[in-house]
Image 1: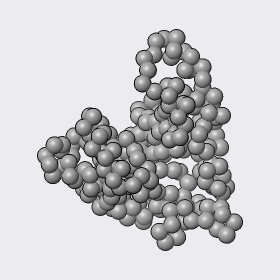
Image 2: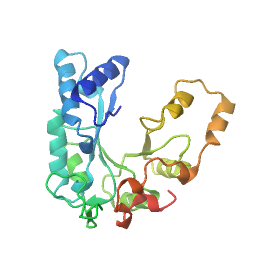
Image 3: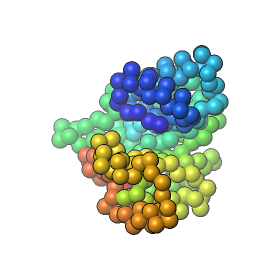
Image 4: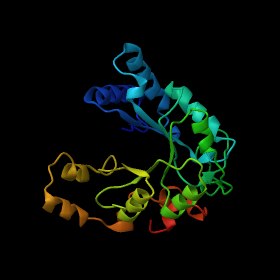
Length: 248
């Protein structure tokens, strides 16, 4: 469950509804700007005794301006403080391309409106596991080449990859690649993205037989089915680690 850019009172209500319904996986990110609201709601639940911290699996993500080794801990500490937690269960690198840190601007742009890139990415995610601030670490929006490079050099391998994944963009090759490396895959936008109501109404809350599954598989459009791409981050295509340049 992730709720981006919603008012605090909405997040509070969403957390209540989700936990009461049995949700135990909460996914957020530094850039979503909702960690403090989530933390406030969780503390209320913890203090009530209705749920224990160890019953939840909480994920957050390192922003693009924090991919330098000396900034990872800073941003994780900020996330932990906002969430009112001592650790997260999974800490992901939100995107493989780094941006220059310019004050508190998470997406700094030049005078032409292009993102200001930092091409000297060198993060220190493993140190956060060593420090007990993250139980596991992983990746988001990385392609197979990037994952392979990280697995080869990592002392603590990535446990999870979070990527766009739905019937129109099934990423079968990437999923198989991760499975072979014992990396779990979590989908974002699995039923589309907010606002795509026709998509949601067509595929949500239904029972599927074998024929239905085959028809869904046939809907895969490959790269043309992607909802989120480099176009959304103007100038990111100039970064050598733009993950969307390659097939998977």
